[in-house]
Length: 136
Image (tube, rainbow, N blue to C red; front, side):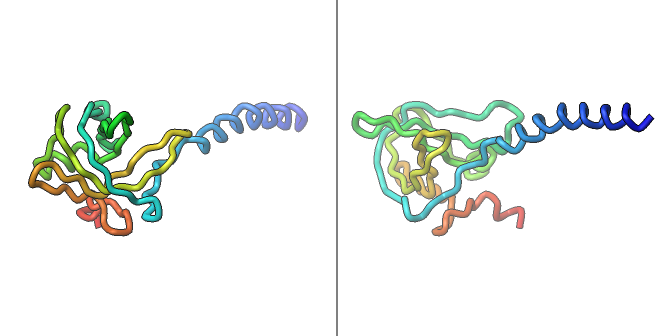
């Protein structure tokens, strides 16, 4: 009677182990690196909003900088709304941000974005998101 139970447990482990390993391979959000911080100017080419129900996903912009198009991660959409800020195609912006890699692609994690006379501060000097402050 013990042999069938051992066989059953072996089958369960063989089926469950790959599913557990896949969960561990999810991409973690990129981390701000002050060592790669840079300043740049450009024009908003596209505003990408997260899908409905994805409150933790960031809004990001595709920004034209000369001939380059840069992917710029901002913050959750609700934080932009709370700050009364919006971006549209053609907006001239200047930003300070950290260049990081995610899934082999370069992206910019914005710390500060200037549009016209308005400055949107998204992260502190160490790169910690300011939208998390209200949860502390």
